[in-house]
Structure formats: structure tokens, C-alpha cells
Amino acid sequence: MLTKKHIEFEDIDGFKHEMDVYFHLSFDDVVSLFDNGLQEKINKLSGSDATLADQKAVIDMLLRKSYGFRRVVNDIPTFVKGTDEEWEFFKSSGAYDSFMTSLVFGGTIDDFVTKLLPKDLLAEASKANAKRNNDTTNSYNI
Image 1 (tube, one colour):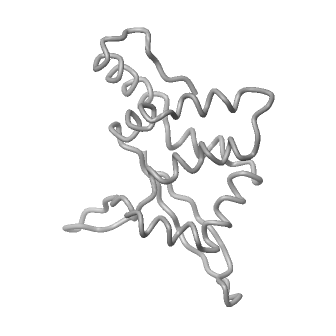
Image 2 (spheres, one colour):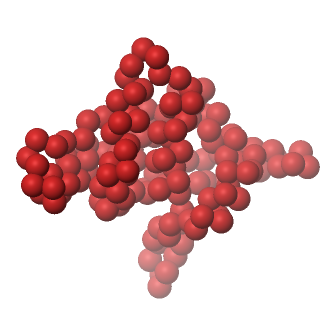
């Protein structure tokens, strides 16, 4: 699901800006994330010893995989994944700091993750992963 977040931030010269940032995870993206250890990172968050660094590791994993841009191609609005260079540029900006602050300290992280990883998409990705691995017990839990 495409998720848009409006942010306000200051650039390095002190000028105020506003922008919309976009995130989207496809079915294949979700399968790839779980194949690369997202479930283990999420499980660690439910423990009493979970740290802010643990929370940030999950967020970074989701954000990097989902960050991109809204583009209009042939009069059709579409989403285009950001390159590694575009992601690094975003991460080094005041926009990223503002975005992360609002997610982590503004209480919107659960809402953001729920929009990015809707349960029906997780269920379908789980089925596909289990089928691929011939494992009917494998499922993703958030």
C-alpha cells in the first residue's frame, strides 16, 4: 500500500520546507524483508529488553525497502523506488530527521507500519513463502 507522510523541516541554512515523502511495499518486497530477517527483528521488539536501536533497525529496514517517489507516467500516477543514492541523500537531510522524529517520538510509528504492512498483504506473503519453502507452518506475525 502506498503511504504518504507530510513533513516539515529546516534545511542546513535554516530555511523551512514542507514536502511529502512516499513509501510502498509490494508483495515481493514483503517476502524479501521477511526472508532477510524482519520477523526476528520484530520479535526482538516485543521483549522487555528492546532498545531504541532495535526499533530503529526495524524502521530502517522497512524504510529503505519502501522509499521512493510519486511520478506521473503517461498521465498515470505511479510509484518509483528510490535508488541507493537517493535514499542516502534523504537520510542525510533535515527531512529524514523530521520524519524519524515524528515516527519514533510522535507516536505515529504503529500507524505507519500498519499502513505499510497491511495484514492481508502479510498473509499472502506468508502463504507464498511457506509454499516456496514447502512449509505450511511458516507465517509472519506483527
